[in-house]
Length: 303
Image (cartoon, rainbow, N blue to C red; front, side, top):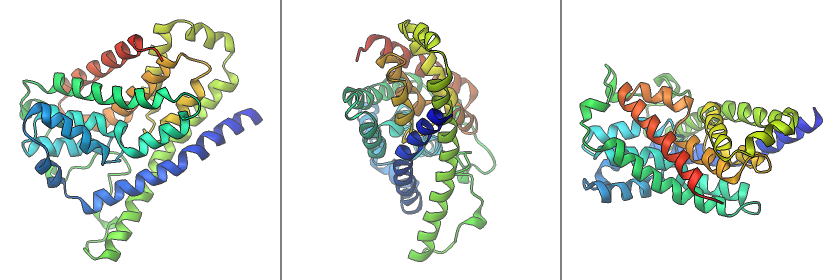
């Protein structure tokens, strides 16, 4: 129990500063940047638009579920579907808070992991966005509802009723709204982080080494195992690096890379959020492409 508590607390203490930074920047963007701004700066050309979508993702340090309704609004305003999907997949990986947290977790342990996660995240986002977004119509992939113009992403951090927010546009009202949003998102993320840190700690302390050795010795099985683990944990991309770091001596580096690539793109939490914004057939197609592309990438790339 002592070993478990030490590992558990070390994961939390390393991750929390980056979560705080992420939620405050995210709250600032939510309060001051209009959704129309994104549609104005993205070209209609699919290739140029995808590149701009990735660049835009660098400046939007929002949680993976928060970018889903943004992507829907972009599509509704005429942005090419592949561009919106590229943005949705790239943003949780390439934004500076995530890059910084990945550097802090792997900087001295495995520096290549930082570069590989960022570059491959961009490439996969563009490829998957193009494949699932090509030859698709807005009506075929979007799900509409009565309150569509004021849709929420579905997670606790975004599903805030209006009484919690001040209506005024003064600096004081805006700062209070920023604190409210940051507070809600922080505690929502921490719930998932605590669960992930606890499971990672339990695995490291209590799971027999021979079981982990049998899994890690099989390159395919180890990749599949950590991909499923990333999907089930639903960690925020600002904190998943600290959980992934605990797997370095137990699984292959390629499997850890698969964990870091898949989690920000798709997990249980944002799959549920997707069902409120996109059609089921499109979600299934997106899931298949993400899992297949991440698996093949981890299988081919050796770190």
